[in-house]
Image (cartoon, rainbow, N blue to C red; front, side, top):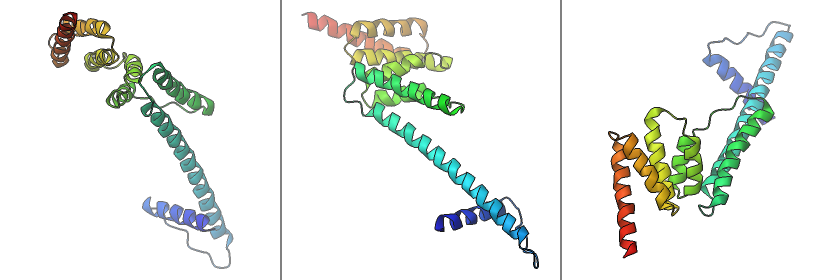
Length: 192
């Protein structure tokens, strides 16, 4: 009963905020005010259902993100987890016939990278390749950084060289050049 009363109050407050005036009670005829209350109750119930649905969706997304960030180690399984989370979101939207909000793959990749999940980050950076032209150099640099962290230095070196060649004036090309020289230096000194 308290929830019902709270919902009615919310509807009345919402109507007041929108500038709607409550109907004055009529003398001897309560059907008008009863209809208003019923209408308010129906609106409040619909609002409550809508909020509950949205909160459930948010909880699902939070759990998916936690799963990605809490991956035990940056290995193949975490890459599969990132892929599963992305497809699970698509599947849940398809099942409810609701439009799918686009996942910002670049932001997800950056978060995974910062958390040390380089395999998951690499997967998400690869999904970001269709991003804005301004972001492509950054995405490639981060892919190379992921490869370097995963011990795939020769692949990283190739990608760093591509960045330097294709984006010589870009700020990130300078960082790519530094990392390429670092990989080359390490290779020379390990050989000794």
